[in-house]
Image (cartoon, rainbow, N blue to C red; front, side):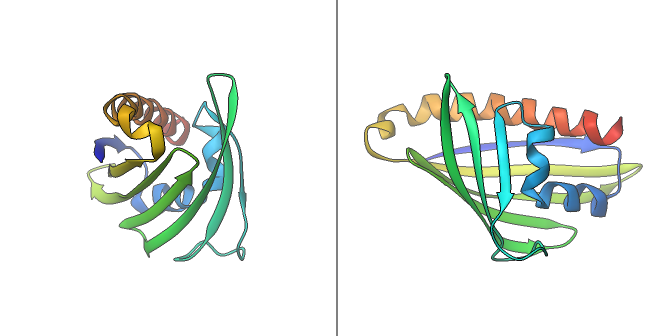
Length: 143
């Protein structure tokens, strides 16, 4: 198992950042790898909400299931993302800062099958991807 962590300050109120991130349907707007995301459960995003999404990686489409496992608006969002080769469990936290929000992420990555051998590589790639994704979110919400 590996852990991916990081943080960024977004110059928007915590409620706004939380609500935008909690709705996975927004992620294709700031994640350059995500090609689609749809809500499978009721229209209200809450604990238990489920999404189906897909990313493009090395020319291949990777399907994933995302479940919101903790929802404490506007301070903490917990989720599990399941893919064929790995499972990501973790949380995003949102803390008020002067003029904005300190957003932190922490994911535990558990690779499956042969991919267990590549866990350190997956974690390094994941750390870089998270920095890009959340940097894009910052630019989008502040723009």
